[in-house]
Image 1 (cartoon, rainbow, N blue to C red):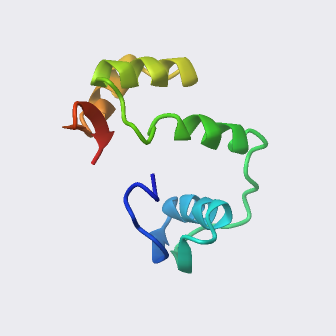
Image 2 (cartoon, helix red, strand yellow):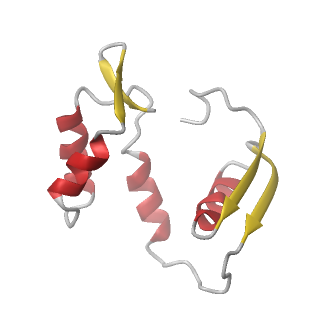
Image 3 (cartoon, rainbow, N blue to C red):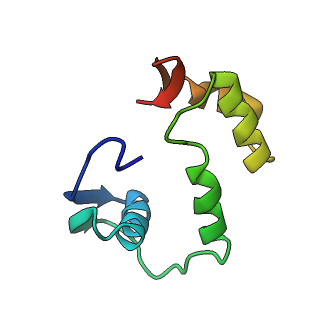
Length: 106
């Protein structure tokens, strides 16, 4: 997604739980992060052993070519995360916008 948006190398500023995500980005895409600024993060909690598998699954929720519909996103999310509540996924899918006949994240 980073490349599709043509974000290049940038400064990343994160707060609270966003710090964990920013650290993952910096670790996974060091070419994308010029400087990393973290505010108010309680470091010291080790990541779960399941974290790498989670991030692989989460990436499937934002395919480069988008989703064929909001319902298709919900089906993928339910397959990847069976405990996710359907109503929450419906609400979350409202963040998808139609572009070129496919649904992409804003």
